Length: 400
Image 1 (cartoon, rainbow, N blue to C red):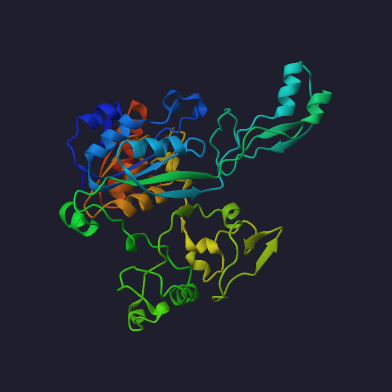
Image 2 (cartoon, rainbow, N blue to C red):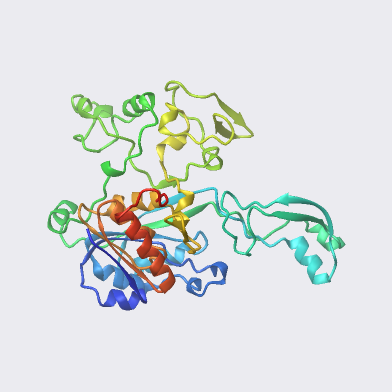
């Protein structure tokens, strides 16, 4: 297991790499939305970036690249135009996004030079993070509530310009096979498939496991032989149907109460569970603020069908002392899952837009080799320290 963090422009660095030298690419490139007015986010990486990424991948190697909800189409088109096959779109759903929306009523009063009366205060809607938002305001700070001053502002009071971000799409693409079949390509290059059994979603409990296996006995093509019980073709095949978890889906959520509330109740009662209530069309599991885990036993929320990637607050520190200043850190649990999904055993993972190194950290934690390329030298240093911690953890010096 080896790793590198290379400081430099990813297009130049990849041009110096051997063709077919990496097994997978997992990256969080710029979204082109001018995030926090950062120069690196002025545009979505175009075709030339993905042409080089295609070249360094082995035939059949997979690419997973995050995109913004407004600019994902440009990312997917560039990846496809570079020669990749678009295989799917994975949706990462979360509750911690901060709404950056223009208050039209306030804007009208400001343009008119009118002073608004302060009528109260409220806490920011910044979610569960203490990081400053894109306006440089602490999300946990109190904000003045003001009343419209002009007639025009009163007319447009409560109107804005953007929705709260709650999902990020991930393009899932594959370099074309060099062999005629996936099986032949896997045997020659080790690439071309995805790790289904290694990324199955754990059952929520014994009852959930029984329900899932009984309901899906005819439709899951995991480790067991093809099952055709539903069509009456081979009743014996169903006896071997014993998957270790639910089939991985193209939706991932963060396990937060806000996201779990959006999933409906489904299936039959599966054992001990807190009472499920229904409020205003949304289903709430258990008590307010409760996040279900495997330890909760069986549950009937449809959220159990999908992977739950939770992040740790300590992921923004190095040994509990050095702050990770990168503004778009992804949860390590999520990155480990994505790396594991598309990387063959002993494989080499590349991240051309490494940031603070989460992909490479995830790769080494999963037992893969990793290469990160990052233009900012400060982020490179943070990444190297995080990776070193992942390989050489020291007790009492902070969580990973």
